[in-house]
Amino acid sequence: MAVPTSVGAAVEAASARYPLAKGFRPSYGTAGFRALAELLDSTMFRCGIMMAARAIKASAITGICITASHNPAPDNGVKLVEPSGEMLCQEWETYANDLANAQTDSDLIAQVASLLAREGIAAPGGGIVMIAHDTRPSGPHLAEAAAAGVRCLGVEPQMCGLLTTPQLHWMVMSRNRGQPWAEADYCAALAGAYQQLVAGTQPLGQTLYMDCANGVGAPKMAALAQQLAGAGLAVDLRNTGEGVLNGGCGSDFLQKDRQLPANYADVPAGARCCAVDGDSDRLMYFTPLADTPGKALLFDGDRIACLSAMLLRDLISALPPGAGDVSVGIIQTAYANGAASAYIRDNLGCAVEVTPTGVKYLHEAAHHYDCGVYFEANGHGTVLFVKDFLARLEQLAGESRAAADLLALSVVINQAVGDALSGILLVEAALRRRAWGLDQWAALYTDLPSRQLKVTVADRTVITTTDAETRCASPAGLQAAIDAAVAPVPRGRAFVRPSGTEDVVRVYAEADSQEAADALAGAVAKLVHAQAGGVGPAP
Ligand SMILES: CC(=O)N[C@H]1[C@@H](OP(=O)(O)O)O[C@H](CO)[C@@H](O)[C@@H]1O
Ligand SMILES: [Mg+2]
Image (cartoon, rainbow, N blue to C red; front, side):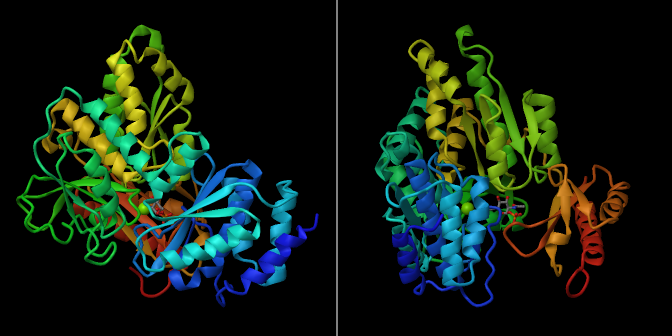
């Protein structure tokens, strides 16, 4: 099938303004495309075309968020939103790669024609693509490039300006469901549900110090906090945009260095603190340590998952018998701390599943349960409720506070994707309902010391993995060598995998002491360097 003439002409006319940078080979990674912002004009334009096609195909609204999340400020990238509000379905990732890598205008038009033919899209037009961006200076320009792509298919781009990634996902989800979908509706829905969850409980009484990573989370949390006035949640916003995005602050910085972010010198040891990343889809809680100034004790995604599962368990056990059996599952990746996995297995009585890295895999697995809790260790995740369970809860909500609270929980916690702002309300509500401080939360279990390293190799695709990335299938011999390095280490565990967002191989190791974890990670990094084509000096 030939591409409709109007589409071909529109692509040809517009694409000259968004040429493929010389030698640039974009690859759809763990969460979309990411690169230096100045390389991305063509990628955004082409993603615009694709998400317009996705909208036409579904007769619905799709979304494009221009962000490079926790990456440095000069980078940018794109996250693509399905009509359901979830991340782009995996089947369309191939189109994204094919379009993004078309070398000439005629190649591009041929790729568009092939997509339209394979998806049975005969005529352009219909649908809307909502486009938002984070605080990076390159955002508005790249959003315009995406909009130009959308228009080529006769679809209307709707410019939403500055939003967190999860807000855009939520808006697309709500709008396609025919529910109130504006940004103000997001704040009202989350704040109202939070108030329901904490009704009748005492405020925690201390300020929450939130590190906004100098990103979009700052203005958006400020707006949400306005709606929470009177709910007993005092938030002190730090790193609100005066410094460099993700520079010396934010959830990723904290997780990597376990060091206090910038502008926390005056925050007392033991204070309740949290940090989000540049697009506010990751959340870490932390507290300044008294005995090692400048260092933080982390409450990571694993610990947030445990707290969420405990809240779910409390509420589910208080449901009336009419609610029937409710399955709760926790989904983790290989990066989950071994102590957290053991705690869940031994104390929470939930099913545990391990998937490859990337929320698209965790999100999919979470759908296997009535309530699926998923968090990556880095704080990216949410709690999903299946429709049928929500319908049962609605029937019971009039007579059962637990049912009403579970419904409120499903509103507080973003059902489209992991959302740091909604995660904050989840954690605050869970702590407040138990009248818990950070001490009790910390006492659930003690993290095993761990270490992550990166190794640069000539071609990271030489490393392939199996068993949810816990074992290497190639290069031959590498896994046996890793096994030999791990064997003598008490509580030792290690694995390696190629990153989906950076040109590196990631090494993870944990053991019963920090020294042992560091040594094991170092030994495994050396093996990777030696056996998988390491570049530069050995680690
Ligand atoms: C170890 C780690 O934290 N990996 C991160 C990172 O993916 P990599 O494929 O490891 O580069 O970025 C992803 C997207 O933000 C996130 O989902 C994932 O958890
Ligand atoms: Mg992010």
